[in-house]
Image 1 (cartoon, rainbow, N blue to C red):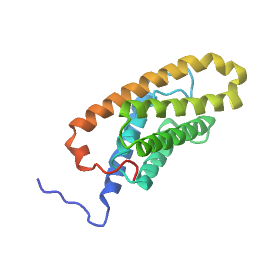
Image 2 (image 1 turned 135 degrees about the vertical axis):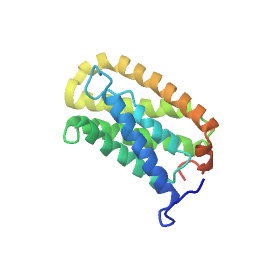
Image 3 (image 1 turned 120 degrees about the horizontal axis):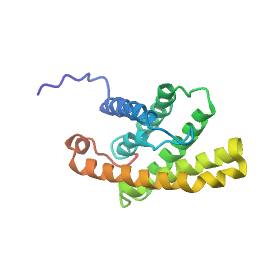
Image 4 (image 1 turned 135 degrees about the horizontal axis):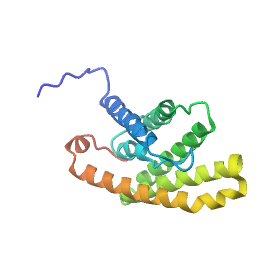
Length: 180
């Protein structure tokens, strides 16, 4: 198979573009799923971020997180709303915590553990914002189901990443040190 690739574009940028498009696709799918709260999402669009942990340099990973945040806001029409703030803070804390865990523990924590940490950081930050901006003490009522959904999706996305990373030739060809 003959690949025509622009030699002036570093390979990580092509990977960012592919994973960014995947984020937007998953954001669109996730947007179609009914939500009990406007800012509550399953986190499907975090899957490309988790996969990027071991294949992108840190600046590429941050670029992907930015694409995910802005792209998701454009797809859902929430760019100029409080939901954007929730998404931005949740994704930023989630991405940075997943990267830190992957970097500090040198892949000794599986993608399942990374997914759970990322989901919990995102959910805790969003619960804090909901407490401060919207619900006040009533946030205590939405906290248990919100964290439970995050735990389940963190485990599920992590399990998918484990399977994908173990069986994908595309992924294996791009491996590098975590968040290097």
